Image (tube, rainbow, N blue to C red; front, top):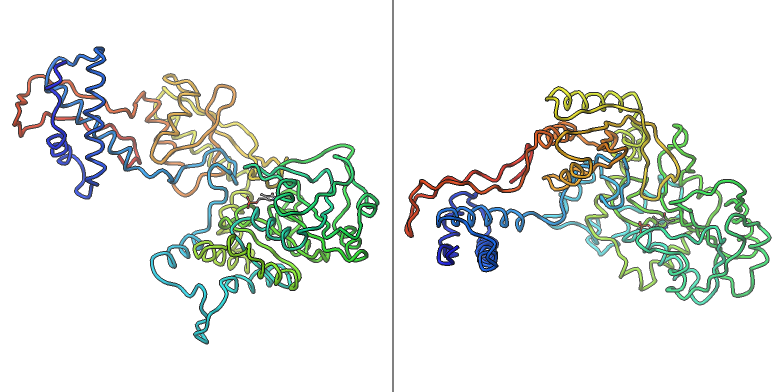
Length: 498
Ligand SMILES: *Cc1c(COP(=O)(O)O)cnc(C)c1O
């Protein structure tokens, strides 16, 4: 290829602009055009690239520039469709929030807010006050504090309650939560000496009792969260531990992990005790996540005795771990829904998804499969009974009955289909089992079934989303050509923003 067939970058930009929306980003387009030309030049110099004419080179530059521009312009963090059925998927942002919570964020995001102002007195107030009363009302706690996430809550509680002393923990509870949050490491970071007691599978009250010395500052209990032990297992229940704490005048901290404010167990889902019941045991401090079973924003919620909460508020670490206004807005809106449990159940997606009735899931799976099957013979969908999990270190080992759509195509292997689904806009996340692509309707939200069906059909028809350059040699393209040969648009897929 002759290198002088490559267009000038500014000319290329002008041509591409005619085909892109008016509000495009000039700097990104310039970058894309430069990279496109550079890329083709490199390939031409390498010798393996020999387009037969100048106009084809121009076409290639145009298509490549548009493609690179779209890629640059797509945000890195974006919405995806979760068809895995895992409700609290850590890699997919854990809890999807209620509409009211999302609206509350929007409400405080663009303008100012009374984040640290008492509107009655005009005086400075604490940001923590926005949710304290609600949390106390919903849980029966004496006082409450919220921080950035539960890892921060554990860090703050340990640093405040036990720094410079010893914390006693059962060997069965020295867990790693994920994202390398390990209880022993956190203890070390806060200058708390870990006193392990018991064995992996069994810890008795006497193990704790024997470990108490004048250095002991805390009895720590940790929810195992992402694993469950079966068989020859014994732990000291919370009431007994609390009694020992009283007897030895040692505070008891319970890292609850998920923290449940809705009676899932009463509806037959798992055996997670509700937070009010945990507090009723007399435990001094509990902490848990805002975006696990609670179904709100990422946050760490700390509840318990006023004296301890007050001490934590005075701890300088609190400033570094503090919660932001968006989180507070979303958390307050989420907690408000819990004031009426029925409302919480209907409007908090996490609860709604966990409690979705199996017969509704079957109907939805069948509808999804029917759309896929009606569209031709290239892909087949079949509904089979299956299980979904809650995920996110909540309700470990629990399997929820669901109906799964098994998809198979003639064009693509399951691996190809799953990875292509991930590249769409919005990306669709599914998984593979028995050489089929599996879609679980449990985690699909409003209208997403239609999008998923449309994309599957589109891909089954063999349509690919890569930009294919046109081959058109009979159009005159001179140096000053104002007529650009028609470039087929980068094929888009239904529901995709190109
Ligand atoms: C999830 C979890 C944490 C960490 O909470 P984040 O909100 O993810 O920071 C800490 N402890 C336990 C027991 C957990 O389950």
